[in-house]
Length: 212
Image 1 (tube, rainbow, N blue to C red):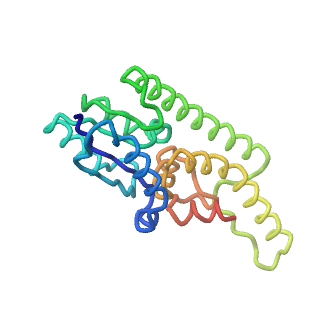
Image 2: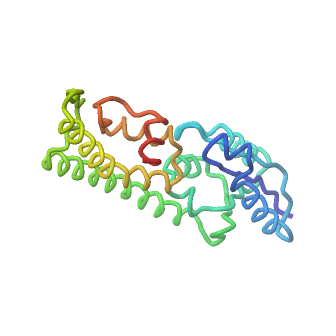
């Protein structure tokens, strides 16, 4: 019988505590293991940043020691995570994805190339969108309207609305790829994308854009 080590992933600590998305992953893994082998261990990654994967590292190490197969519920989401792809390819550990059991190392290489291309296109769209916003008069610096000027305040509000409209699609795209709020902020800062006030991005700043 084959030995499997399950790896689950949720994006936030809140999701980890609530079990949001985790129960579905566990059920998918359990259904697959039944009749295919034995589940020897389970690891759950509650991600706070894009670059830290302690549970994945532990799962891969156990797979190497016991010659087990890494079992993941959904490759479709993790395949968009470049760090996960990189770790998996370098580990030389066999894996099975429940939602794509026919996937192999060639598939992973292709998915990695697609993910990298998507990142480059997102970066290009971000720069183009910010350039277009600037051409429309949207200020990316720190607007400080005179309190007594209603017209000035209205102008700043309009600039803020336009800025949000410019960066929100990018933020939503990153969120849909599985990035946490903190990871999105790190990504925007890494690309030198300023906030509306010309400062750095934080999880709360990203949340404000999403809820605006």
